Every structure is written in C-alpha cells, then in structure tokens.
Amino acid sequence: MADGSQTLLSHYAGKVVVLAFISTTCPHCQHTTGVLSEIQNEYAAKGVQILGCAFNPDAPTLLPGFLAQFKPAFPVGTASRDAVYEFEQASLAKVNYVPELLFIDRKRVVRAQYGGADDFLKEQEKNIRGQLDTLLKEPVATSKSHGTHKTSSAPVASAHKPA
Image 1 (spheres, one colour):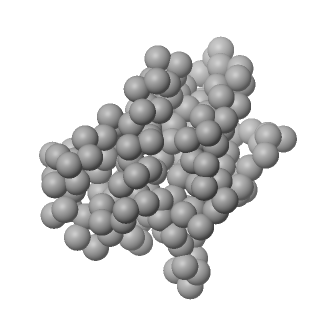
Image 2 (spheres, rainbow, N blue to C red):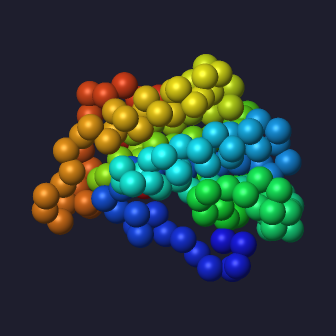
Image 3 (cartoon, helix red, strand yellow):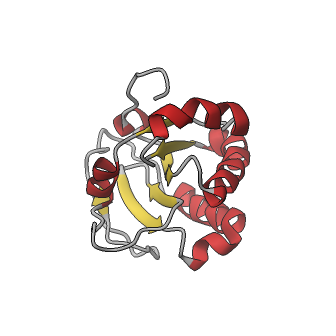
C-alpha cells in the first residue's frame, strides 16, 4: 500500500473481491478506477471489496499522485510486474493489456479474469455489475470452508485458481 503496509487477500475471505491490476499512467486504468469506485460504493454493503494494484515500473513513486487525482473508493497498492504475472499465472511472452480484472468468489477462488483487450471491458460498468451479481447470488459458506476450492459451471474467462 502507499503507506508501506501490506494488504492480504485472506483478509477479505467471505467477500467477493475484484482485484484490479492497473498502470497509474494508463488512461483506460484511470477510467476503470472511476467505474470501480462507483461500484465499490454501491456494492460494499452487499459483501464486495475492490482492491487495486499498480504494477507499472514507477508505480511506487506515482501512486500518491494517482490516489490524490483519482480518489479511488478502495485500497490501491503496488507490486512488481513479476509478482503480478506470477499471481495471474500469465506468460511473460504474451502481451497483457491493462486494466486486468480478476473476480474472486467468497471461497477465494478466481472465477473470472479479463484483460484490457477483452470485449468484457467495452461495457465494463454493466459487465462488472453482472459478474458481481452472479457471484453474490451464490450461497455463503456456513462453515469454515473458506479454504475449500470448488469449480463452478458459471461462465469464466480463465481456469479456476485459488487466490
């Protein structure tokens, strides 16, 4: 995070999480930050947490200005490109376009992943809300089964993987 602290995904177990990998200098990411802020304000009470992670080369230096200018309604931190690609299980040989959105269900399973070149982001506000509504309709775990990773027949853009 900008203050040097770390935020772990495990802190949000039981919530639906949108993890947005962004570049602080990308106009598309800046726009998406505004869209995600509106959605965070509306969906927080429903059990949704949005998190941002900037991973452009100068992100640690640029993040304070980005936060001041765009005022995201959700926490935004930084990570190295290598750490982001490892988490996403992305290939360094393939071009990956930002923003990159990962939807993580209440059981901490990545259920969908969309990149900047995907049609999903052409109507991002509608599509993000639809994806969240789908995940929020799923039953909430009644026992301490947050570590259990199940697959789903819901449409996904990538293979299920634990977050």
